[in-house]
Image 1 (cartoon, helix red, strand yellow):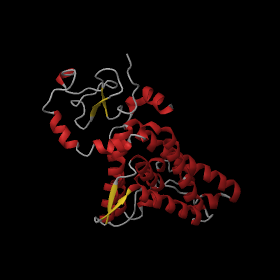
Image 2: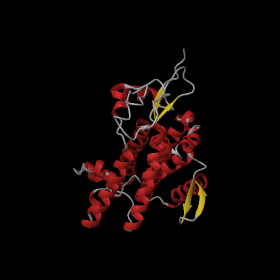
Image 3: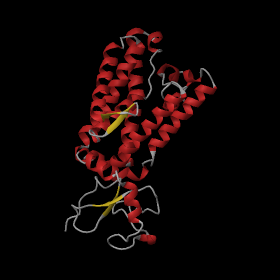
Length: 291
């Protein structure tokens, strides 16, 4: 699989805990807009203004998160972090990095292609209104989460339990509704392109991670008692004895231990011949060892 090959070459460059960084960027963006009214117009992804010297917009549009009340923003950011961090644990840091950054690159590319088409079709004035953000990319993160954990429950108004798969259906209906009703102005076309780019990114990963997808439910069950298992591990010596530097656990692929990162989870693979232990980033993606 292409993701496996890329991870073998570039996996060491993956940014760990990217969900926290994403949420922190949205928080910074919200504070800036709160403290400096109108600054949001200087941060958006607008190809016309980028081509006229405002190149910082290629990066600063990543600060443009939801725009609402403080309480709602806190809720949304915590929800984003919960979804994204769960995906990072199942996919591994490299795959989550790839999902997010391919989506970001696709959004930038889509914005410039939309600008170019409108520029040659209707002129510079119309094309100057093209603007995009990561809103729909974040919505497809929820679709990806539902793909991995379809039977997980969230509580509507903290009372009514709803399975994630049904919320994903509503998410899909909403995206279809927005796509069909956004119109054919420059702003409307920008929305349509943003949705198409985000969904293409989702489908690319959906069909590329069939093996990992089939284990999402098992991973969810295994993490229910994570704290209890951690406490138990600290009282026992793992199979194979102590690892490097006196560690109890060591990944057979990247050789990281709990001393390198206390948040890492380790599991033994039942399909490998021998006692081979893997971290959460390589549990589902490593090549099985056969004697």
